[in-house]
Image (cartoon, rainbow, N blue to C red; front, side, top):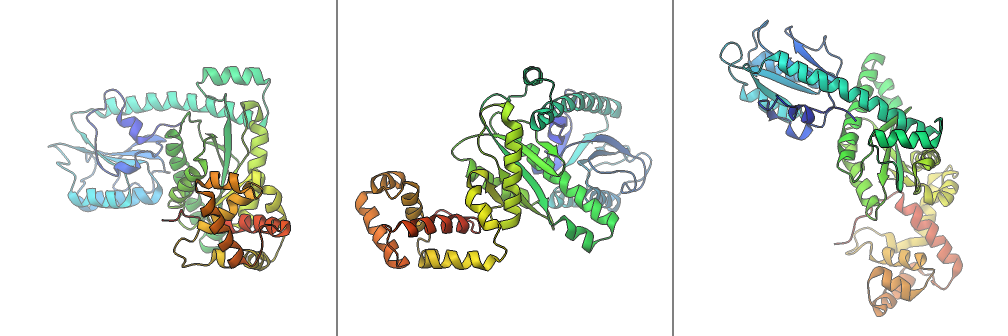
Length: 406
């Protein structure tokens, strides 16, 4: 739990604050309010501040305000608040608004009649309360994830008091940034560290905002270099995670991201086990590098064997030999036969159940089976082919971005 720019705008007494740019980035976490008293801010902030510009101590023309926007983005501030009125800054130049929008920086206008003491007191009080609540909630989750609690009953009691919905089934997702070493190879240590911390903060802000939109959300937890999410289990979870991966990847710059998904757990007493499973799945994902970024622990049996094959071309050749034309590009409906083959394998070659799974007539299924056997040169009655096909499909999915046919 953290206080975002959006939540600050909703605090009592701050209704006159007006968003002028960056409205799609209001989920950024605010570390503290900072009143800019110097010409620039780059040397005076560390990232995460909500910076207030009054124009009292320094003349704030268009060029200076543009410079503040650029500096603010470079150091990772949460947002920029410009006070306007007759005395100092009459209005925010349109060029400043457009540049802030272009860079995704929340830009807020505050009338001079709204006193700074009122604003900073409201924000400071809310931040102090939120910080205490956040520490408590993170401590509870941390104990449940590591198993380091005095008793599970006490941990559950604390969770109830902190309004943490830890009872009920969950899927634990562990995420980790990859290719961090490239930053330190390409940049001086100070610059590389700044880029890394800014990226981690941008990712955390995004994950927290995304998590709040999910059913029965729990706070995002950080365990070492891991970002840990405890998600409610539902049928569309794979599609949900695919969307999360795409949106998160847009914020990573030169880095990449991989995810490991644990099997379903029924209550918080199993969170430690789930974290261990997610770590194992994440290690395999980083090794095999699927384009979806995700590895599911439930598929680790065969994937661990594939991970042990040092020569990646051997896996690619096996997939190509087994699935052949079924995975050829440029087909009108490239996934129809693959989905049919997968359904047959999932139902142990039971055509009645496979047709029901695909929601097609059995005659249609029979026609597809004939095409699969013609194009692969294999028979689905052959148990060896079915075993090879199941492994090949799994390996293929780990290296492809599967899209539904049109």
